[in-house]
Image (cartoon, rainbow, N blue to C red; front, side, top):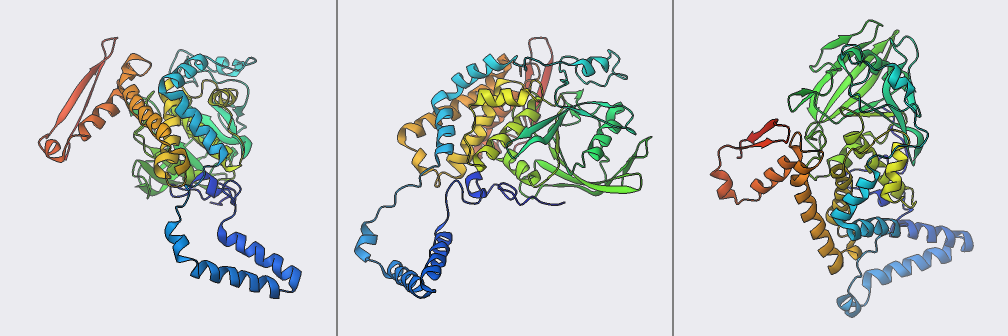
Length: 447
């Protein structure tokens, strides 16, 4: 698969967005600056004066004044203004104000939104309808249109742009139904897709959330009526940097042609909830960023988890381009103007902020040391505390029905126990009962 030689193509968990954009945010390094001065010296004095000056300065740096070096206290690295503005806004707002901010946006859709194609393809018969959820419309604007020989020209999917690819960076779609898998693969073929990101399980809380549209075992094939054949050529393996992401290589054959598609499956992100606060999202985005063609991203409805991961990439690309990131409400509106109801609830909105703060203030705290003033550290500690509490209090909001937001908080609390206490627990579980009488059991061994 070709990789894009762009500003973010090679960014990974060990490389932050400002460094990934060729020095535009943090500026040239010392090595690069030296090369530039040498070049200017050669141009002016035939290489003699410039070279002598550089050697002299280098020698001075190496020998130096021992007294000055001893007394020197290096200043903390200065955070780039774009990063600083984003971080300070999140810290100043805090969890509660951010939740209120999202609630104002909760029902936002573009003013000219229409859904005629969605309505035309909807039926109360689950075996006929092309839409997984009646209350999750697919807007006509930015819709993906399929061409023959696809069995149907409609699929519940929209193109979503990001700063580096303004029109078709992503294809955000619902998880395929059993009878729409063929359309899904024609969408992949017609858009020359190289990467598929799946953010849900096929079954969650006892409910079918997505069809098994790809062959699960190595050597297994799925064949469709229009001649499309999908083969698992690698088996499924955990991604090297993060075991929660399962990677499968697929060959998709049609009309005598074969394309290679990588399937990346994030397995621990609960429906309507948020995953543990690690840098899995950044690892995942780093793995697919090199694609020059649209990247397919889906969960079950294709708006909550899907919109969340796309929003994180939007922020990263803005920072990498050395451009001011819009306020988060505006960013949500920009995404929803392309894919209706992207980012489904306030927990997901908070998760975006939590991940980015973790990235800047924990993972790269030395680089952004200037942001870690005593006042900001106190704000960040409060943010983390309130965020963790909000995951449990999810039982009072949209996540109540399946209890998923409580699970993370519950296990976090257990794992904070001492090793001796944990070793005494052989098995532990909890029933979470929702307001409608449904219940879900969470349990597992702690070693």
